[in-house]
Image (tube, rainbow, N blue to C red; front, top):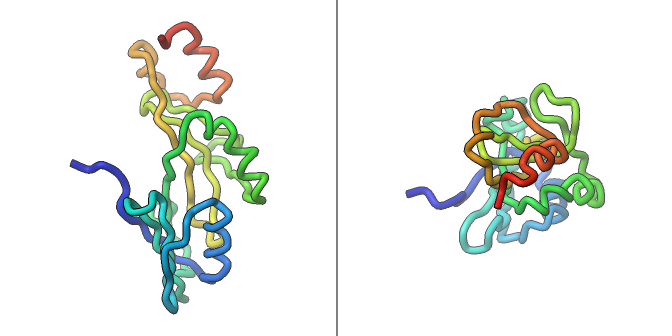
Amino acid sequence: MIKGLYEAHLPVKNLEVSIEFYRKLGLKFAWRDEDTAFFWIEEGKSWLGLWEGKEYQTPYHPSLRHIAFRVTYQDLKESVKWLESIKVEPVPFGRRTSIEPFVRPNQGNASVYFNDPDRNSLELICYVKVPNELKHITEKLSFGDWENLVKGKLT
């Protein structure tokens, strides 16, 4: 039934700063009013709403302030360079210390994380084809380790 993201909303302290940040990520501006702005994630399909207000300045758990943007595997491989080129710092996920993208074989995806100016958690994520014999791996693997592991297993 669910086909993708329709909309997501994030609290922001300064709407102008956030508008500039999300434009820098390449999202297309849709519209704004006094204290909200919307950006297309996929034009005509899904969008992101930003809501400015003092009540949004209280820290929240990242699970309440998180959006994942779908990308290709190749884009994810280049994501750290891209983020750095637009002056956005990637951040480690969870207990990881590396900012590099990583693969979750048991979930069939790979991702890299970063924050917006209000420390909302953002993620670039892609699907990863996982051979059946590797789906039990719960460890998060670097792209290099992953590609060495699946070499010759994917056809």
